[in-house]
Image (tube, rainbow, N blue to C red; front, side, top):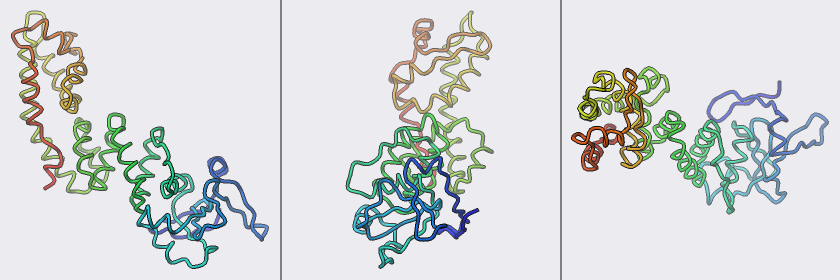
Amino acid sequence: MGSMYMGSDEELIFDTPSESHLNEIADIQHGKDSDDVYYLSHEFRSPEADVIFQSSDKVKFHLFKKELAILSGGFPPAELVSDPKEIVKLPEGAVVLNTLFAFTRPQRYPDLHDLEIEGLVELGDVAEKYEVYPAIMACKIIMRMKISAHPLEVFVYAAKYDYLDLLDATAPSVLGTPLLELDGLELPRKFFTAWLRYLDALEPLRKVWINTIRMASQDPDGCDRGCYDSQSTLFDRLVIQMQNKTVLLEASHKQCSACSRDMTFESKFKLFPRHKFTASAIEKVYSTFPKFSTFLF
């Protein structure tokens, strides 16, 4: 086991380099002593750099204080270093720091689209911690793109850093998540309380939605109760689509669990012309849909 030191967040970090993931971003170096082995970043290795950071897994990054001062606001240890050979140890791993430091240079920034959600969350946390502004904005943009695939992760991220616009965009996709699961995500208490109020506010909309569906489902070939239950379940999955009426109509395809009736809006237009859903009716539901952030205050 390698050396141990205390990270800035009071978490114990062990220096145990793993060549499997480090070789892609750094190469091994040998110091003056035979047991002095470390890694040097491929990208950040300029001999003219005036500050050296070392990750928890012993990768060194050579950076410039001037660039850090322009594009970030959370690297005070760099300002305290007068000797460019002095090493500033950070508690984060090399992979996330390698991506983070790429946002501290006046260059094209990394493309984060293919980053897995775990890596994106980690990068977002580190970017917020060290106030690397370009990385913060990039993470927020990509988080918005991942709402449909990872709503809970995005919701927790948005709550953690008070991104109200991202919370509003994500909250509908979290509907249907058991309260115990939400409570286990360690959200700040004000967000959990706001969520309970948000659910209460949605109930009138749910009833209007289901009653309208129920009316449209009443015919000799339908089963009424089963169709009603199917739409009750579907409501949670469709709320977010209210922002786009066209997507709403296309996304509402579902079969009744009891009678296997096609619950698509478009088929209702054909089967039940007296109860078809007009654009104005859908727009009315959307206009009364509450934003989650309104329940935080």
